[in-house]
Image (cartoon, rainbow, N blue to C red; front, side, top):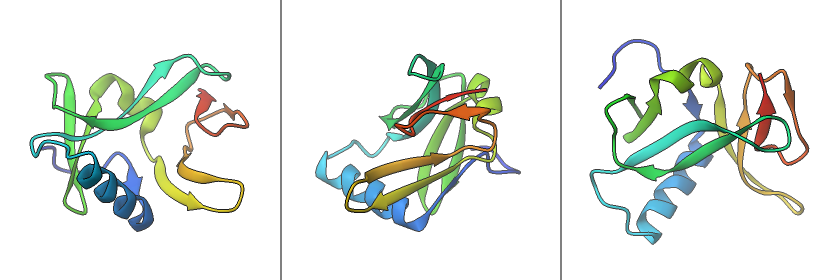
Length: 113
């Protein structure tokens, strides 16, 4: 597990939802939360958020008891990002507040850097 600065933050509301999802989906104990980026989306990059096994290129962090995996090459796009959970009339789901994003799109899951 990495020591030092935590790359991202996850709000307590988002942690609660992630724990609920983990239990509902019966995710194996050795899996952690994968946070990353991939090419695509309406602004150039899309976020990756899901449970997965640790891979060789991953950095591992622990946030409120939750193992978090970030591929080292993705860290520059994610450093300082906050993952939150919104529960509203028109929006419900995870949101990504990323200070590295030059531009975001209306869906909130795509950005350019």
